Image (cartoon, rainbow, N blue to C red):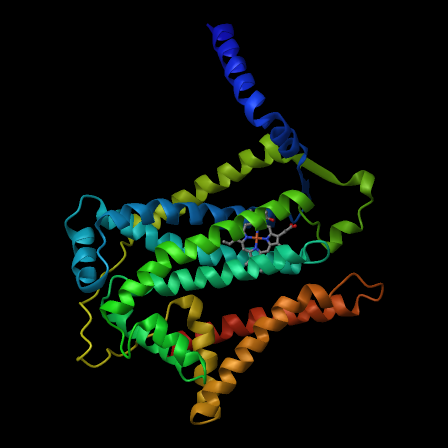
Length: 362
Ligand code: HEM
């Protein structure tokens, strides 16, 4: 029975291999190894981010079966949450997984930063990563409005108002909003962005990002470079590291299941543009830092000057973040490397402090 099965498998494999040359691809993948050292833990976070993205795609398709953008948006989400079997769970998993994905990406980004994995030849890995992060936050922002409850409505109104104060940006904001006010047209546009435009940009970019990792392999942190090459350890990606990846994904799935089941995602009151904004309106936690920084600039420099300066400083920070790989190349003195590490620590500290500060003030 066993040999019968083996022969059938071999015949099928040969049939496919003759036509698609999969043997070459398998040999190529088989060559990949992953370094093993005391910081290897951080190599899992890119994969964890990807796991949550896969969950987003699967649950997103299920939600799309019942979600109706436009005037019926709130009612359709109410039905998903209260009437459709397990609808509440799918919605809860989608919302929790979105947040966990952003968290995993932040951890992944800061870990590759402090491991200096952006250095040559991995610059494009860094830049494509920053682009993936930006797209992920736009995924979050556009998804947030879709249920059209009070919180979603007012947070989107405030969020779109921020770039709207920049000269030139208001044209883009009007285009995305589909009119002067957030309404049914905005939902339709955000929905198109969320399920068509963003995935169409994200998936090929992610493919490029992963291809680069396959091409260059995983970087080792500077501390590990001091180990003589003959003493460095590594394990094959297939099947060893991949099996560990799967085990970590299983843990991620468990965390997600516990959160989604024990803390079901809430649906607030239906948005009413005529009612005043409820107190304590704030953006999602991953926008809180930039929201608070803009608020502080507005306080220090009254009028639109504060807003414009805040947006400029924020964009300047993003540009500097992108330029890190070009500045910090390996140099014998190590001065630039140290400066960049301090810069990263400052960015991390400012992000955390302004996030907590923002929640404190809400
Ligand atoms: C959806 C978002 C992302 C996904 C799914 C993703 C996925 C991955 C995966 C699977 C790896 C290989 C394993 C690892 O080293 O963790 C990787 C490596 C890498 N990623 Fe990402 N990534 C994302 C976002 C980012 C961001 C935001 C950055 C930085 C701005 C970034 C920069 C890098 C770099 C430089 C590497 C190479 C690391 C090395 O050589 O060790 N990625 N990414």
